Image 1: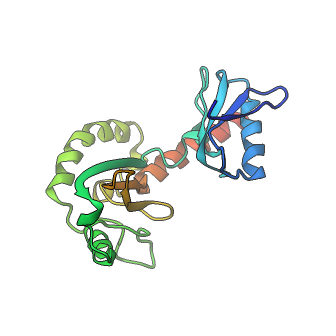
Image 2: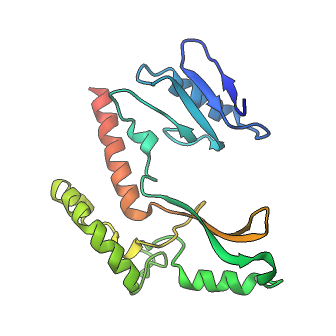
Length: 211
């Protein structure tokens, strides 16, 4: 068995893939609280990146029956995670990776988006490349269906944030596998539109629970 279990009283079983990974007590308490909900289906699953967060534990998988927990979906509903193997091997890489990092930072918009004090949105494309146009053409009909129902999301910076990185714990990383193959791994942000959608429905859920 490659996982450990938490078996709190009057709660669903919690399976944790965290062997060798320290888990903060606040995260454990939050997981136990979630596992006690009557809507949980069978058990919770916890990944190695687990940590406490507002509303829901990051790194947890929460199967539910006949219910959705907006805070568990969170504001990162549009975050992306991908690892792509390249044709390169370790010996193809230069000893100093700084120029590669500089090139990636120049090619991919990243950082905090603009606000009233900052006119330029450094986290967005000035002029999105053609590949962004191609993917936006696929996404736009679904986004329009959403904004027809919820017009408040029209003004989110959706198009110019497509294919950008974000801030916080989002990253692009050059990795090596056990056979010295070179991979590119990234964790991209949900960006402004994801934050707006998630925050809106979390607030609706809070108000409905108060009634």
